[in-house]
Amino acid sequence: GNSVTQMEGPVTLSEEAFLTINCTYTATGYPSLFWYVQYPGEGLQLLLKATKADDKGSNKGFEATYRKETTSFHLEKGSVQVSDSAVYFCALSDPSEDSSYKLIFGSGTRLLVRP
Amino acid sequence: EAQVTQNPRYLITVTGKKLTVTCSQNMNHEYMSWYRQDPGLGLRQIYYSMNVEVTDKGDVPEGYKVSRKEKRNFPLILESPSPNQTSLYFCASSSLGSRGLMSSYNEQFFGPGTRLTVL
Image (tube, rainbow over all chains, first blue to last red; front, top):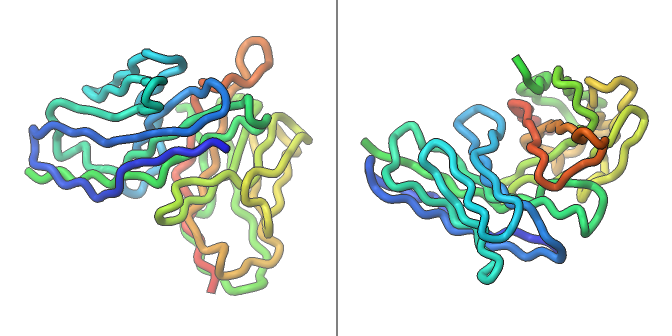
């Protein structure tokens, strides 16, 4: 079946440091890939997405490239800010497996950025 | 403002006492879904609905019921809550697109979450 694996957190960085959060996936079809962010006390918000191989999603300085050959969708940001502190979820949607259109999530990675 | 709302945001209850968590969206979305979030497990789908009067089980439906009598509302019902249902619950909604089809890349919009504790 489909699954998503994320690196364990928490990830603690100083402000302006470079961020990478690793995400790999297993899918039977041709999934779409997402990064969602959850700020403290809030629901999930879509950060970026990619719908086919080699697509690059980007938003708010974050980027992730859909790599079919390595089944990866790593999240990167060149210079993090304190306001980026949150939990980040990698997710996929692959309706070829069933018809539920559910998002399959990784376990989440907590990012803490220190001033 | 386009949004998904959930109520209550926090609930502490006791085993066996029936409860309902409400979910409402104002975006005229056909698709709605419930997830639960548990540490180390990410979010897992409980139930989903493709439209009014159309509901189906997700990955972890045991102990839950849903209904979809109106397009905007999708309540989650726990008939006899147990401690293993202590969790953070999220409702989500999405459109089906212009052809009335769900696309794998349609964004799902999430509510703020309901933290449920069952003693």
